[in-house]
Amino acid sequence: MRRFDAIIFDFDGTLAKVPLDFDLMRTRLAALAEAFLCERPTVNGQPILEWVDKLARQIAEAEGEAVGKEFHCRARLTLNATEIDAARRGALFGFTRPLLDTLRERGVATGVITRNISPAVLAVFPDLPRHVGAFIPRDGAVKVKPDPTHLLQALHILDVVPERTLMVGDHAMDIQVGVRAGAVSAGVTTGSMDEGALREAGAEFVARDAGALIDQLFREKFL
Image (tube, rainbow, N blue to C red; front, top):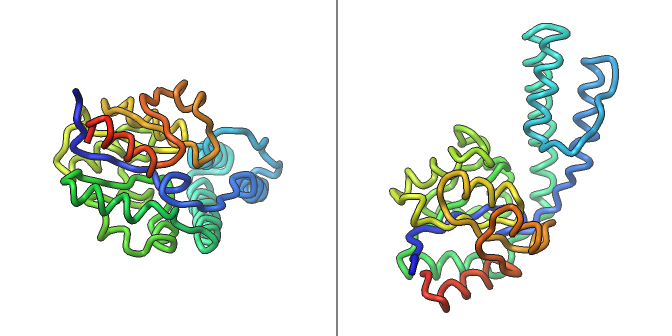
């Protein structure tokens, strides 16, 4: 039977409830882009960070590289402000600290990777670095998930191979980053996706929340 040496967690929706309003983010970014493009871009379902990069390329092609960089900088500041504001209204799930402490006591390495920024995460969980061995927010990542580099960066710090790692999250991106890195992925339904969607994305385990997932893994001798 496989046993996991490390568990890497997503943050928003997995270890904490953070009321991020992605529709509001897209609306604000579309309004900002309109000032550069003279027309409002269509708001679509593309992930926000990737959409910002795409808009910056469009603006650079139309107005020049410097203008594209200016938009990109302003867009990132808009995102950062929205994320920090949401974090002030966020809270850890009650199981989060006990879960991380139990894993540490059992000798399981832990980490957190997130597309959110460090100030926002630490506004919700200021002592996070004391509870995990690796913390890679967006501002510390070489590339963000679902690119496997994000997960592999954390595993390099922990000195654990992907094959002995479980990636846990509430979104398809979390599942995909685990699969692409060669790890096992698990989904939790504390975010916006249900069990069917998480399994379709590639989750081998699904539980109602991360606390229940870890209890299951201990019962079934995966830890």
